[in-house]
Length: 599
View 1 (cartoon, rainbow, N blue to C red):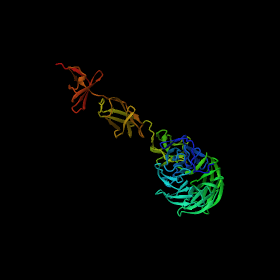
View 2: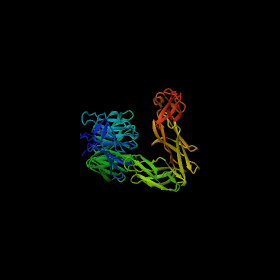
View 3: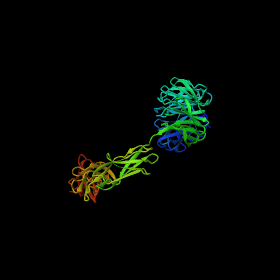
View 4: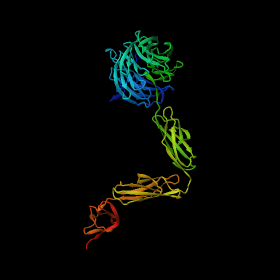
């Protein structure tokens, strides 16, 4: 039974290694569901365990891999911070995925036994007990930046610092100094101790909590079984309240009406009225309760029972225990409202172009990290709701209709979210509906402006699309391809033509096609294949025997300086191109031959 919670370092076997400041967990983390959960750290098992506040069940476990005795949550519920007295560090955990973000060292006196986060979530504070025994002035507070996850300051406090809490406005931090019997008041702007308040009566402060209005501190003194009430503004003790044996953990309800105190010896929780500062209820829980936390809505208290390996669930309204959740050797507990995870929605059509009156089915698929999303999907045509469906076990929902009018319909699927996942909307799907015309056809013809061509020469491909019937005539897009590779697209003009020009074709033969995508009145069609030949010219004089010239076209000029003739073999003869003085091909003469030039 650990009645000296957060006081003495215990050396235990390390279950994971810290490399370059990042903990490598010995076991994979489990994603935590969205909603209100309590999170429990276990110094014995080195684990962080999530508990569903409604179902009273364990939702997941992240293995920290180091002895950790205290935990705090970021105000937005996205991250958890554990104080690891096993290696003088803080571990940062993603509260949504359960994954460890990082583990960073503390450079102060060591042995962090408590942790708190500022109300605005920008800073964190650890209470560092230091070495147990001499030197007696080794306790401190480490300040860290939650954006960089690095320590930014160290503040030396009283001896035996075991607990820390931040005021609701974030301007002050208070520490419970057990060996000095006092509370240190820290100015968080300057990171300096500005006051020290004795608890009186020989008390040894273990933990403390501040009321929501910041007007009172309640300090648990574990050696004399009391709670000291302090006015932190005046720096004075208001009263001392007798509670159970060995009080440790302290928590205050969000409305400031009650204080819950975990009494480690005797297995009870004392409930104090802040109006009368008297104990109004004593609740029996598990063995050796060492910490207590109140849910954000004030309806539940969770008590970490270190001795019995459990978390007791208390209904605050009735003041009774309503459940118990097994958790191995719990040391610290806190609550967090874990945010929802992001979702992504897509929508597809069973037939993207339909004839008026035909049935079409839209399928929405919703995905997210972790479990399969649940809930409802709303299908819309622009702003008009078409219908709803519930996601199945695969995260899919469908809607079938035959009532879409002729035209283009912008279809979207809107996922409404659930307790775990946020809402999301799919990209727009364009659904085409055409008037029935059973004889409508289209034909696409493709021609090249220069075939063959040379590398770097500009070639224009022209696609002409005709329709039957001729009126109203095809409209829409044409896609030009070199085999399977898309070269480009163009929109049909008023004459039903689309063009694509390129000078980037490499040497060789290119199977060029043009594909018409269709419109509301005409189906698509694919053109004939144009084998575009791109050939590198050769100098004629290298091909004809000495004493012969090229005939055909009336040219007999040899290169290589322009102007000159070039040729390539075609059907066992020569195809001749004339390269003019500017290097342009101006005439092609097929089937020219080498002729005898003898007089």
